Amino acid sequence: MLDLKLVVVEDDEILLKRITRILKREISDVYSFNNPDDALNKIIEVRPDIIISDINMPGMSGLEMYKKLNDQNIKVPIILASAFSEPKYFIEAIKLKVKNFIVKPINIDNLLAEIKEFHDELEEKKELTKKEKVLRIQSKMAAMGEMLGNIAHQWKQPLNTISMCTSTMQLGKEMNNFDFENELDEYLNNIMESVNYMSSTINDFQNYLKPNKLETNFHLDDTIEKVEKLISAQCKAHNIKVIKNIENTNLSSYQNELLQVILNIVKNASDELIKMDSEKYIFIDIFEEDGEITLKIKDNAGGIKQKDISSIFKLYITGKDDTDGTGIGLYMTKQIVENSLEGKITVENIDFTYNDKKYTGAEFTIKIKSLINKLVDA
Image 1: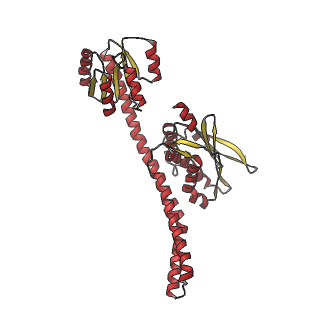
Image 2: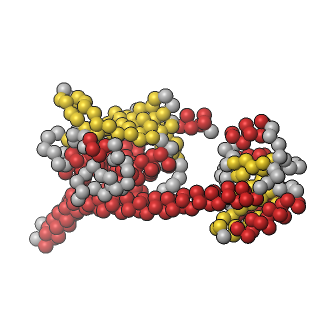
Image 3: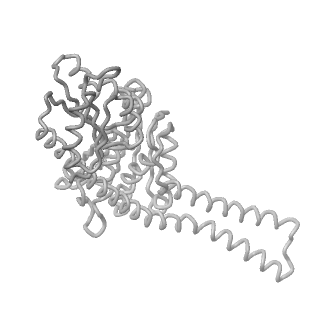
C-alpha cells in the first residue's frame, strides 16, 4: 500500500464511489468529495500529497479550484480528468503547472500507474531532503568548529585587557597606592568596553549559526560587514586584505543563507591564502545589472586545480588537500544558491591586475534576482 494522502474531486457520485473504492485498496489515505467547495476546505486542512479532480463541475471547475489553492500558496500537484479536449483548458492548465491530464472515461490501471510513479518521485525527493539536512548539519558543525577558533582568537585581546585592569587595581589596593578617585572609572570603562566587545562577538556568531529561514529585505553591504566580522580574526592573524567594491543594493531573500554562501567561499579563499608568503587579497564586488544582483568573489591564491574545477560543486569533491577539505562546503553553497536563493553560481580561474601587479585566482560569480525583478515576476 502506498503511503500517500490523496484527494479525489468528482461530481459524478457513481464514478466517485468506484474510483474511491479502488484507490483505497492501494493508497493509505483517500479523501473523496463530490463538490470543489468541500474539497477546498479539506485540502487546506490535510495538505494532501496529490489531488485528482474532474475539470467540469457545477459552480467551480477543477482549474478554478486549483487556482484558488495557488492563490493561497498551497502547492499540491493535481491530475485533471476531462472528457473534453477544449484548448482553453490546456492553456490554463499549462499556466497553472498542472501535473497531468487524464481522459475520461478513466482507465483505473493507467491512473494507478500515474499515482505510483508520483509516489516514487515523492519518496526520492524525501530521501534527497533527508540527505540535504544531514549535509547542512555537517556543514554547520564544521563551520561551528572554525567559529569557536575565531571566537577564541577575538577574545584574547579583551581578556588580556580585563586581566591587566583587574591585576593593576588589585596590586594598587594591596600596595595602598591606587588612586580610586581618578583611576577607577578609567579601568572600569576599559573592562566594560572589553565585556561589550566579547558579548557582541558572541551575538555575531550566534546569529550566523541560528537556523533563520525568514525572507527579509536587507542591504548587501550589511551582509558583507557581518562576513568580515566573522573572519576578521583569521584575516588579521594572516595579513589577508579584503577589498570591497559594493554598490548600494538591497535584496529580498534569506540573508542568513546568503551569509553562509559568502562565508563558505571567503573561508575557502582564506584557507588557501594562508599558505602563501606574498600579498594576500580577497576581492568582493557587488553590482546590479539586467535585473539581477551579481556578486563576484575572487582571490589571488593561484586558482583551483584544472582537474578539480569542473567538479568543484559536486559532493565530497574538494580542491583542497585530502586532509584539509571535506567536499561539503561548496556542494552546500551551490544547493543554497540554486534552491533557496533561486540564483546561479559559477566559478572560473582568472588572471587580473591589482596595484599594477598581475595575479591569478579563482573567481566565484553568484547571480540573484533583484528585489524589483522579483516584484515584477510576482
